[in-house]
Image: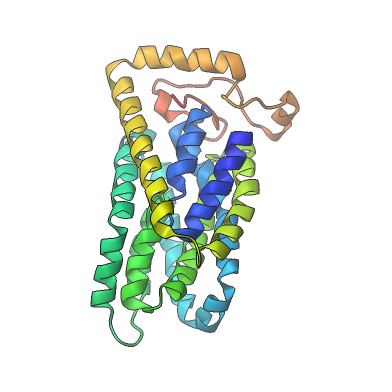
Length: 304
């Protein structure tokens, strides 16, 4: 619980400053024994309040342009719902296989962020231009997984919205918050959220997001970017090893999952009274352990 709260604080702060807090929080949820699809839903639900806290910290930059952002917000919401539906409707093995590559891509985007910012500055257009088609494309990705969507939004907004990075960061936080909340609703309705874990993340992400948004104007971003890159490299390696291990020895992974859940239920020590909220804390894998957490009634499962 403490680890999830701490991850929420750091993830919310990173999202506010540079984006990609998911690179920190998602592996923590997996390490807690939560299945990949459920971890994704719980991560999105948990970080959503922090995204709005980050946007609130930038309200001075957002308010004068809110009318202009109305259409990008609407298209982002629709696109994020589509992205989240892809996670829910497609076989969970598709998401589980894609995650290492998504995390790796997000890490590369963060490493290339200075070059992206330079390109954006060189190609920025005078005046204001249509944003919504581009924000919609990013919204699909944000609803599906989300790590790195902040960097994508900054590139789009820098080229089509405003040359001032602070104005773009405020709009980025607002659009990312809309995408996260929309995806969280879809995941919640599909039963792909472990609410205890999401609550722990949210309790940390709210102050982390607000303080991160306030500090983003003064924080040395190169230091924070280096930290996020290191986390991303480690997370990518861990997820790749996990995927290869399952492909080569599914029965061994299955046995380790059983051992994990026989000790602590779902990897998180939760009082039994919380069973009243219909959280299934036992080990409930089907034929494919990756599928645990993708269905209502199977919120928690093999996170190995």
